[in-house]
Image (cartoon, rainbow, N blue to C red):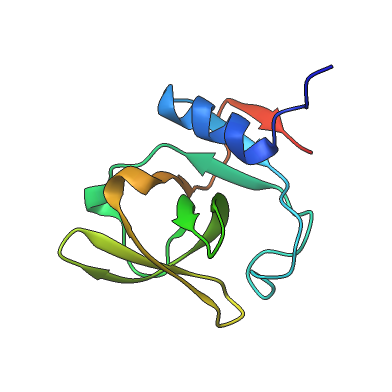
Length: 115
């Protein structure tokens, strides 16, 4: 029996195909902007249009492994994006290829990937 794909992997694939998705991530890293379990609509984005403060689905390199997070763009410098949580934690710098989508409103036709 194979493991069920994580919501972030499903969202990454759908965003790469140009689709808008709704996700309901859990955790407290974005408290104050997104509560654990809130529905967030993600849309594909042109990374040239990203701005500081945008909430993005991004792949970051952790201490042990790479993982996908729904965090905020904290700074932009020479095509690189500093990604961090709303609780003050900084994940690190990523290139444009590591950002898959941006939180978007209002909702459009979307698929739902809820864990």
